[in-house]
Image (cartoon, rainbow, N blue to C red; front, side):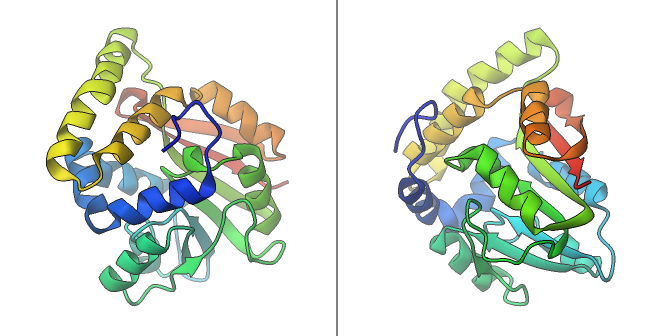
Length: 230
């Protein structure tokens, strides 16, 4: 797998997620020290799903981010470009309409969704700007984007500890729990290389979104960015 600071080959990224799909949710819970569910709850609260709302959940993986949106009555489409993830999702949540979709070339009409959301997947696209532009295209006027992604802790001492954990402890834990530990080494590096909150907000604005802001979770380990289609 290419290192995180190099261009991401879409086929390699998809194959990587195919390889970790079966235990992806379990390993994520272990590596995040149990925080994944809390981050997803906070993201769901920001989306504020309700009956009649049409939501596209990109990089949905096994559907753990889509499930609470559907439970609230929203019409949600879990989309991913990893066939392995889609297969695991269909097995775990057969009631959800899992759909193959590349974030850089979405198979949906202009202005189709009230909300486009992506949790912990934007950094794995080979062209973040294009992904943000495609999300804008398929969103209705006045609709929103909600992005949950690993970010930069706001307190410097904690940021140092966090970075060391990512690059040392995370691969070691993955080797004990995952059949593809190299994938988690890539994920750790991709998190470290990812732009901070302000830099990502600038990218979202440059893609054409307005009213861009973010909310830090767990001292900035994760940030939930949001924007509106004017």
